Image (cartoon, rainbow, N blue to C red; front, side):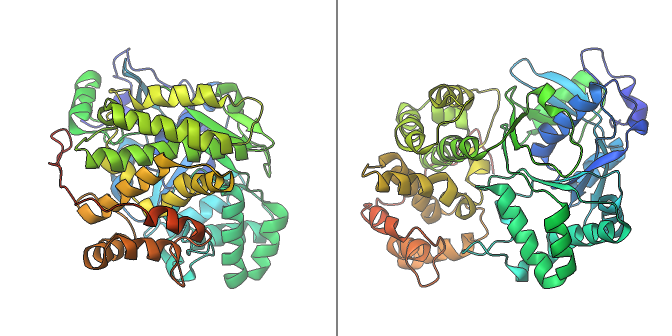
Length: 463
């Protein structure tokens, strides 16, 4: 029996639940990319706000390609649970009113964006979902299946009806993500609807944000244990840590939820928080992922129990990344590093290294290379970044764990021409994979190429 409106009333008392009437809450947020992270983060905050008495911040989730999330949540009337922390406290979330699929529900998605009740359109589509070329410009050849056409048609309908602008909230790991999204969508509109481009610039706002919560993929055992606990099956369940952070530039086109009452920080400048997260948390996470897989580990907590890997992560965060993060009120970087090491070591999370290792070509510049440039400019070495890059090269040579848009190209290049050719492709080719980082090529060319050793697939991480 599935979780739904009809079965939720029979959940055991240890499952906390919302107090608001879902049917009386209008949809105020349209969200593209309604995966586990969104359900554990932005939707959780929306649920908190409505539970505290705010109205009309219910969510219409949009799944652009896969029907998986729609199939998980629609039979459950949008309901799902979030289980947090080592004590596995479970709470029923009612913020998601509907889930639409881009390939079949285009008209309904456009109507939701055009509805005057909609005041925020938000995104967790991952770095690759923004369809950027290597130079940062919009790749128009890839936008057909992205969010851009649906967003443009929805905003064009608002423009025609006089409904007014909305706030676009990018919740992905992109440096200056608000400015990036505004620029990319502006490029799309300039090509497809110049009138909309002017209206968008004048009427809409795109604040930058920083989001942080570790949300591992839920395994079958945890789902089965949850079903036993609740007496119903929840196909949309998410499991996460107790820690949650959201920092938002306070620049909205209209009303916003009172998320600050639930821990969200509204600030004038997100950049220091964003830089700290990308270079310290995300940078160390990627180091642990590639070096941990090479060492035969399956989970983050296993890699953190390896003294050599823990020391590398600590070196990257405190010695190499931290000095390049701007100081700002409310951000204690030494304490931040302490908390990150504690979070990474938590075995209750069960965060798989292979999940973090995905899409490396989309992540490495902001996670490692910006730190390496800052060290280079300061005349300092960055051995942890060098070791991390070496582990990524091993990852390409090993090839078992690679899940990346450019994976086929780079694994083939590595197999046929070796590490030097991969480094040249990344930094110094006429059209390099990562423009602007050519000065780092020599740093990584000095790496000695050890033989590729295929550690056994970790027992804790079956294929």
